[in-house]
Structure formats: structure tokens, C-alpha cells
Length: 633
Image 1: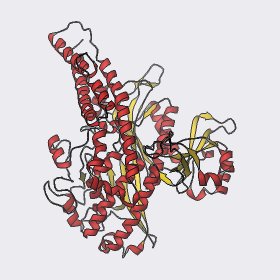
Image 2: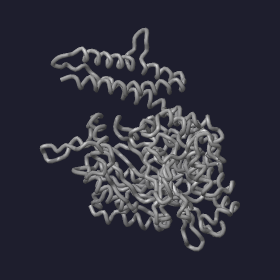
Image 3: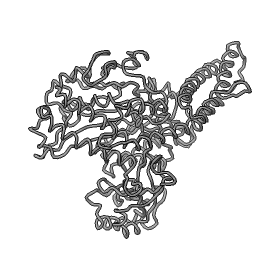
């Protein structure tokens, strides 16, 4: 197929009626249009509208969109079954991308059949804008408006960012980017946990040369992504995976590898839209080449999970045509401007009410464990000194800087994963950052004072940050602190979805940070909490317990040449763990049964505690069974 003949996107400047008609008439391979709304959970709508009908009804479609109901989107407490009218209204401020079906080749054009996907807003009862894209749009608007006002009211900051006054600013620009990690494997292959763990420890896969169908699919995916204008920076192997096997036919089988793809930043809303389209393309291309792709945060126990590090920056377009990074210090002896310090401090201080929108699933929290290059502590790294940019990969949010490149300064939030709702991740992160910027500028703080604040010791009072917390470490927080020290200094990380969502109720003052400018309100928070709890309990009672049952069933007695007393002891420990986890008796209920009962009774704190116990017992079972197998021959 000739990729040069295909349409990949329609830019905002080209989405007027006449322009769209002209473009689509030149590209008959695009046969459908889909208005893509995103609900509170991050699920997106997809419907097939014939292009001819879309062009004929363009004006009406742009104004009124298409109508769905509450059963097709996740908007609990908003779009209920008895009040379910939801309109999907096109957003003309962003790129519209074409999604191609490579398994359906048009007889007319010889090209894949395409669907023009138009990012859209969800509107309930014709007046209330709802959903994730709406929340991010509101957050961007509030951040821009308030930052300009803060600079105007606290003009001491102007000398640190290189302007005379707030009047010099044409626009505030929020720049974001994500890094997409994913596991790829041949269908039906089952992971060998020990082999994967050993390969990861030895770093046998990290940035190594790809081969076979993985290489082909990766190269094709990068080429297609560039056709869309995403400006791919690189694709490479990540830490997880094992070497594929070359079978007799000359093809590769038993593929199980982890990859990463990075592309250029964009303005915040466009960045979230871009990420959604990139995931669709990657999944389609790899599947077309016979490979399964998973974006789960932790698809394989004992192996590295999939992260989606999210980069957050703030710039200003000036009226004289210049663009400046508001985090980059003009003084080479300083790490950042006060605006940069404020943003980072706000993100760290308010992370308890940001985390529920990042780590919203059991899978996400399973990824955030020591030993897998995923953050477990609310802490940052700036670098040992301003002339040495930090590359500490053990912190939650790192300061990224490149000497000699003032545009590069930004924060890297390392906790999101590919299943995180990127719209809400970016929205809540910027709202938290704005709170810190407001506190810093209103207090008139200098970079020297702010470096001292963010570097304060445990128990030391700060003007903004909490007394009994530490927020900066240049050490490896996994190796140089004990678990007890980490919990004391940086705060205890939630172990379950219930613990995480409970932070919204436990931190009412911090929650108000999200309410500014009506970005969030009681209704949207209640809707999100109900969606999160419903997803957690459903997944726990059905999927997770079922997956654990499969692990328990895999632990079977092995007939060896000779059974020793050690084999008997090891097997008894395995058998007792299996029974405790899954086997009921008249007098005693198994751990899985007790979890299901707690969920039925809506005793969520108990269910959460039992979930932690079950996870620990499963890990113990895996280890015990491994010991048992190793002594059998």
C-alpha cells in the first residue's frame, strides 16, 4: 500500500466545513467518522458514521454531535439510567486523526479503510459538560488565568523569568509528553516468572537489538507514527523480557519482550489525545504482525511493569515573539525559578489527592513495588548541584534539565502507567502544581529559600511543606532506606485501591486544590469515586481471585525419582497455603471467600486488608512452590 496516498490527520486550521469536505473527497479510503468522548474512567466512545452522512450534516454535527446514553459511558451519579441523555460534541481545537483498519483493505482504493476520529466533549442534559477531556480543558484554563494573575500581583518574580511585567505575556503554554512502555508476546504464550526475573536482574534485554517479528512491528509502528506527525524520538527494548526462540521454520516463537516508544511533547490537551492515538496504532500494527500487546501496568508477576512517565512543563509566549521556559533559571547557580520550585513542591505536597487519579487500579498499585524501577515514595531529586542534572530513577517526580537547553526543564512524574487516564493525570498534576506556585509567589520566596524548603529535614518547619516529611533525596531510595525509614520520611504508600481512594476523604484541605475554578466539584469527585470503587471490587472479586486460583492450581504435587523428608515438608507448606487461600471447609472459610463476603457486605476496609494479605500469601506460595520444584528431579 502507498502510505503517501493516505490521510493521517486534519489540523484545527483545516476543520472548517468546506476544507473537511475537500479533504475527505480526496481520500475515499476514509469511509467513516467517529466522535470520541472520554468518560471519567478514561473509556472512549467509538461509533461509525458514514463519511457521506457526516459531510451532509456537518453543521448540525458540529453543533449537536451525536447522542448516547448513560449505559454507554462511565459517568456514575451524573448520567444514570433514569437521567441518561449524553451528547458527544466535537472539539475543533485539536487534531483529528484517522484510524486505519489494516485488516480491511478497500477494493476501491487498495488502501486500509479509515475512520476519522474526532476528539469530543461529553455534555449531559445539554448544559453540563462532563468527562475527562472537559476536566483537563478546565484545568488548563484555570492554570493559565491564575498564573498570569499571580505574576501580575507578585511582580518580584519577573526578574527571575526575564520579563518586565505580566503585560509582556501573550499566552501561558502547558507542555506535556508521555513515554509508552508495553509488553509484546506471541499469542497464548505463558510467562516463566523466574526466567523473566533473572533476565531482568541481569539486564539482558535493556536497550538490546530487536529481532524477528518484534523488530518488524516496531519499525513499522515508528514509521506509521511519523506519518501522523508525532515526531517519534526513539523506540527501544525496556528492562523486561526474555530471548525469543528460533523455530525450525526460520521464524521466531515464544516472544515475550518489553518495549518503549517516545515522541515529542505537545500542549497538554493535545498530548493526551496524541497518547490515545499512539496506543491504538501500536496495538494495531503489532497485532497485524501476529503479536499481542498489553498496556497493563503489571501484566506479569516478578517482572517489570509498564510505566508511562509523564512530563510536565510550563512556558510563556511573549508579545515580542519570544518563548521562555518558566521553570528555567537565568542564574546557572540555581536549579529553577521560584515558579519551578512552586510547581514541584505543589505536586509533592498534594500528591495524596493526585495519586487516586494515577494509580486507580489494582494493577497500577502492583507495579509500584521496590525493585522494579517504579516509584514508591513521594520524593524528588534535583541533582547534587545545579551543574549536574539529576538522573535519579528512584524518585516519584524528578527535575529534568539539559545544560545549554533552557527549553528542556520540566518535571518527570514516574508513577503513571499506560492504563492511567492521562487526561486526569495531567489535570490533577497541574492543579497541584498551581497550588504550590501560588504559595511561593504570594510569600515572595527566592530560589535560595525554596531550595532550602524542598531540602528540609524531617521535623523541620516549612512555610508550605509539611513538617514531618522529607521531600528531596539524591540517594537511591530503594537501597539506602529501610521500608520503615521510607514510610516515616516520605509517607506510607497505599497498598490497595480502597486505601488510595480513601485519601480523597482523608485530605479535605488538599482536595480543595482540585476545586479551584470549578475544575472538579462534589459531583465529579463522587462520580469518580463510585467508578473507582465499583471497578476495584468487581476486578478483585472476579478477575484477581480467578487469576490467583489459576496460580494455586498450577502448584501441583510432582512425582520425582525419590521423595525426601524435605520434599514432604515443602509440599505440606505449599498444600497448607493453597488451602488457606482457596479451600473452604464447614468450619473455616478460605481467604478468597472472606474477601468476597466483605465486598458483598460493603465492608471495604476489611476487604482491603484481606486483599493485602492475599497478595502476600500468593507471593509466599510462588516462592515456596519454587523451592519445592527445585528439589525434585
